Image (tube, rainbow, N blue to C red):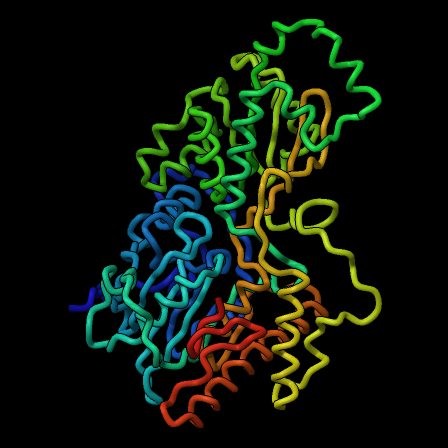
Length: 486
């Protein structure tokens, strides 16, 4: 039986618009004056429904969301409990006659990909809204499992998370609302697990070997080292007593995997601000709460991302020295923007016309399809998937007491991951949800049209084949079966 939400509730981060915000009993008696409500952009409204998605700032005051996000909305925004409806994960729910399923978005805690199945006069309309997400093959498989199950039947976690093979024949997704934060070929991120493992191992080495950090990334001068190695340390006791503070930049929520892994490797506790602690308590993890320390003596600290700079870390170290006895600080700025510049993933800027410009091909022609394949293969060669090790860590700034490392730990999809996700779903319409300059927006739109071209050609191959099976492998893209790019 389908899980049903009572008729009173409106939907998915969403519902009716209000002229003023709603405050709960924890809100100060003198509430701030509400700002004027901006017009709601069309891409926030889901077609064939009364729903909006991610419309907090537009006066939407009644929500259906994941449990973690529900807790955060009440805690951070002061929204009344009565207006927030938490839906279970990986379970098809009936909300106002629309089938709604949440799956984990591999972003920050509480972030979900939403699968809508909307009955209409034209038939069943299928909509996928990714929200902010880090795309993976598991996402494609879970979406295809959901839409392959008749809407009269229940979808439960054991169906969505099943290890069974993905259906070979899947329905078309009518609309995909896509997180296009990094939709440029130059954006390449290593797997999160590689980054987390490398940073945690690096912290362990720094913590156990006093000489590791000063010598990290530097080759010894052969003319000097034979002499200096004979010099005794001026104060060998100071090296053994040295205590390093490790700091991780974060936003209101996010980057939890990184600072938890560092703390576990060090056998240390984590210090956060009182406001951050309240947010982490919303995640519902008793294990994480037990790792939080009451004061700054903890060896791992989490701070606002904007404070991860030389001045900010020097001031933070001075504050922590009073109760922690720290002699230096090693800080990490984990963000997808760390891919560029002199740091990890740097690529020379192209001169003249960009050879990866999708505007050079007509997506409707067969030559356009071949050009699309060529473009994606070229992008994969120039900016393809990479691994990440300790050797890839390069300091952005350093002094005798402060060292800062940018880390390409992204909770958004890279260009290659977006290409795989889109090309793995048969989507009729793809709508970007992140916008920048007109030139970048236009290039992104052309890439999306080209990716759709790949699916169109696969469908033509499938219809032409006697067994209704398209070619199983493309030597350039590495395509397997009719949908998945691996």
